[in-house]
Length: 404
Ligand code: PMT
Image 1: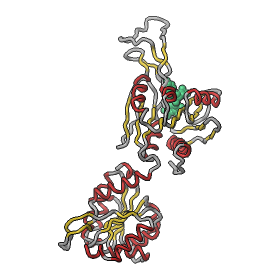
Image 2: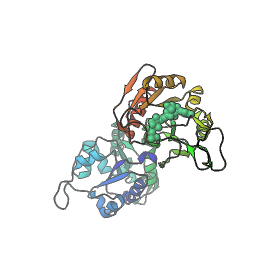
Image 3: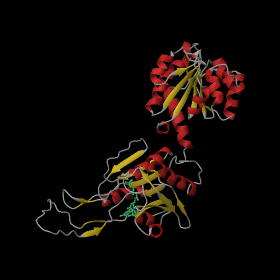
Image 4: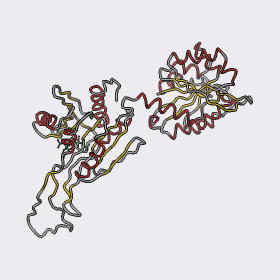
């Protein structure tokens, strides 16, 4: 159902016995994280009350050109609001109006104003469905880009049996979710992201850490999910959290744990992005008891942690590999060295010299550096920065112009 999260669904409801099922349909859409606005034909109101549907959809339900105060129900605005329109149930009468563009009710004027995809879930009696006119209308609507959700078999209100019952609400929701998912640029792709800091323990109380909040990595995970990917987010300690059906969130603490988890997934991912601020070193010895502060000086011997990104680069086969470089000086030169040394497809440079860039902020200022090119971006919210990064990935690897 993930493809429906945040989607604006305009539900056009026409009059037939299947109209009662729209109450269930709305509940399922809302449960899947979508927003729903309903337009009913006057005939549909004979089967289900607008009050039922407005209560379930948490939005006013409209059916006429003006409301009770004679204010215009703006069909153009409704159409603009929608990510897609679903006409369910769609009667033979409404199908034929869609063919000739007959705008004699609010649903039809809104349909004619809509530029979004339109799904149609027909429902009618057997003979009507089998009539040549209906068949021609449905194939014409299919040819002009409408998406038909096939009716299902069962007993009809007339007492006849046939494959003309409106698809069950859960099947409609599943059909649309799958259809939307398949169109997403990262459908069927796996993305691995490292995020946040690592904590390298000195004793049970103290650790070596850094200022990373995880925001940059989490925003990239959200963007990848919105593009239809399955995401594995390996996160160091942060107050952030994220849930999504296509997300596997693994919370770790040390660089070694981040490395161990990352390597179990790396072979099977399509894209790997290392945005974590991984501690390069860890204390050689872990003190089991809290270290006493009796001495004036305290020495900690450090040993190197595994370099996760470098290992990704060494084991790279099909993966598209993106690293980050957090620099304070000689930024481009340092970033280019990391690009080369870690065998990356590109590196995202952020510099602590730039206002609004780097740790903790809700914003970042990045440059995307490849072997032969540097693209510099303005300071932006990290959510927008994440989109810039994925647009670059889509354009270079997947030759996809879709915007993240
Ligand atoms: O988390 P936020 O508060 O939102 O801040 C975001 C950020 C500043 C942490 C992020 O934008 C960022 O720059 N992350 C990388 C920080 C870093 O450690 O940079 P580096 O230049 O030291 O490391 C180079 C690359 O190697 C990085 O992709 C890093 O994840 C990776 N690395 C480094 C060391 C190591 N042992 N393993 C690694 O994978």
